Image 1 (cartoon, rainbow, N blue to C red):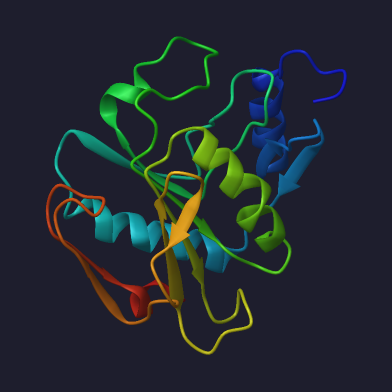
Image 2 (image 1 turned 180 degrees about the vertical axis):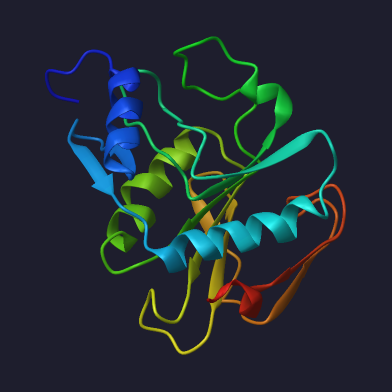
Length: 192
């Protein structure tokens, strides 16, 4: 990662507060500032509300966080659009940005300005960090689609394995895929 030995995450968090934007570090040590559009934040929040109403009490649904350095403190530092994570993973020491256990689910909402990183570098980092499932969502007004859609990627032995073509409408996830209870997602309800 170039000349950077350890990422100054406190500085990144302060920059994010001042900028009112998501601040991440890419795999080359470059700082990436991504101000989320209103539609982006609304979609992530609506998905969080849908998930939070259906999942067990021992997991947490978080929008725009937590900050995660999936390959260690000297690696990239990401702020996922949404994660589902065991509450125990958040009991980490101050200034430590690894997650143990890793996220159950990581979600990125794609837009033309972020999709290349979300589908490449960040997807790779989430996999290396041990995330169980990775969803990417495209919404009208944020991406060039007529209808909300989601691609589901399960953890495979050598990388993410898409479960098929993009999903649309109402989706049902049976226990174990990745949730311990049945979860219903209304993708059409995410668009603003």
